[in-house]
Amino acid sequence: MNRYTANLCRLEFVVTLACTGRCRHCSEGDHSSSGEFIDGDKAAAAVLSAAKAYKLDSVMTFGGEPLLCPEAVFNIHAAAKKAGIPKRQIITNGFFSRDPEKITLCAERLVESGINAILLSADAFHQETLPLGPVVEFAKACLKAGAEDIRLNPAWLVSPDDRNQYNIETRRIASEFEKLGVSSAKGNVIFPQGNARIYLADYFDLSAPVVNPYDEDPEDLRAVSVSPDGSLLDGSIYSEDIVEILERYSPKSCVGGNSYDI
Ligand code: SF4
Image 1: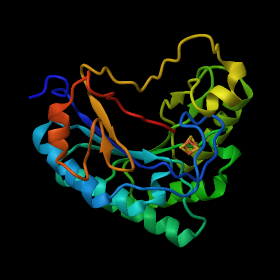
Image 2 (image 1 turned 180 degrees about the horizontal axis):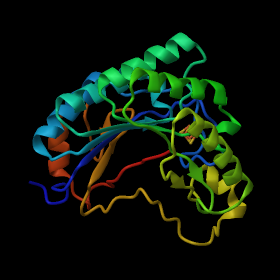
Image 3 (image 1 turned 30 degrees about the vertical axis):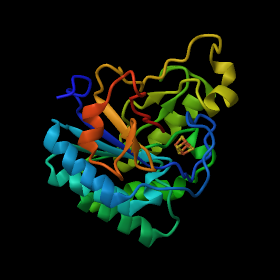
Image 4 (image 1 turned 135 degrees about the vertical axis):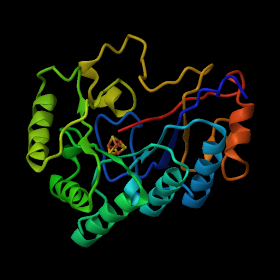
């Protein structure tokens, strides 16, 4: 087995870079409302194949906004469940439709597909451009559908304890969700990359090197991330078996790592 990927335990899928949000803290920069999305069948095949070769303990889908392409999300997580991968997570901003029927159906199918952790990106930054009402409806629909674990995954500025105006508003939004029975995960602290570097520059020392907390050790990949066009490391899951890509990986030939966002 390739020593650089021998400890791989997590597969991530950037389902699409299209997004309903236009967040000023987004580490990926600007997103458009439409764009390429991953082939759900091929992504599901990659999950099944990788699970035979590696001891995977989690599969995550995110974006952009992954629920703009719900069928791909359902396929990926159904495959993860079939393969016996215990953690099956999605990060979503929760706003993909205003139609109550579509929201309910999506929540039911998410739960049916085997997702067992829904991380909802709701906070002062997301809610500058995303309406809270449909996100609350989505959270309620997930609870009603029997979601095992749905939690807020807020973005904090400077630190979770800092009392800046954004964090104060994020705490207010979190308290709205707590009333519904949705608690908050620890979330993430914004780092100066993409839009955050431009629009929140006053909060950072831009002369210091940027530390991306999601960068992987290229000599010991624990998580890899498949892009919306199927690309992974120096290959593509659309044209070859994911295991072949992972087995030939070398830190000298390509940049590894993940791109966990939101
Ligand atoms: S932070 Fe998330 S929801 Fe906001 S624009 Fe970026 S990908 Fe979209």
